[in-house]
Length: 207
Image 1: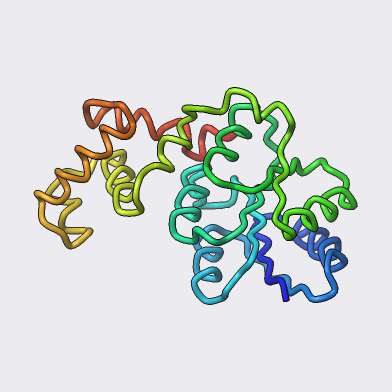
Image 2: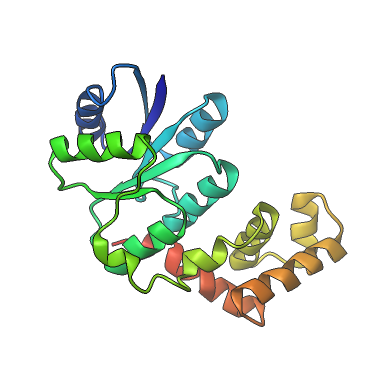
């Protein structure tokens, strides 16, 4: 049994995908959500094999949302389905750990074929993404531990060390250690650079 979650804020597109994917495998269970928070709750409640993710859902935070999901559900196969054709965004999606990137203009029959292939353990990206994908922002952030990633997002929001320590229920010295490791892994030297580092991954950058 394959358990697949379709996460997209357009009901008609979700319905079309659901009909299309019902023919991918004989033994497949399809669920759907329309927002990032609902998606997260569904993933916590249910053991999903695959997530079809729209980066521009409400409250998804764009690529940051994808990175959060990869950090929290490392065994989950994530396929990004988007209308965005920006080559850099597609490279970031690949670097962040998604197994496939599908443009929403792709014929439904081809989407069915791609999903079937990914369920069998394959990846699907434009051929040019295999060239020069080193050192993307997503790839660097993917080096962070889940806790370091949480600290980074809090720094980007402007939280002080004391506030971060309180929210994570850790000592302030622990936060300082995390920040030191974050700066080292990202190749930055201060909080302003940390905020700027995260900025390209935010939702408003996904046109």
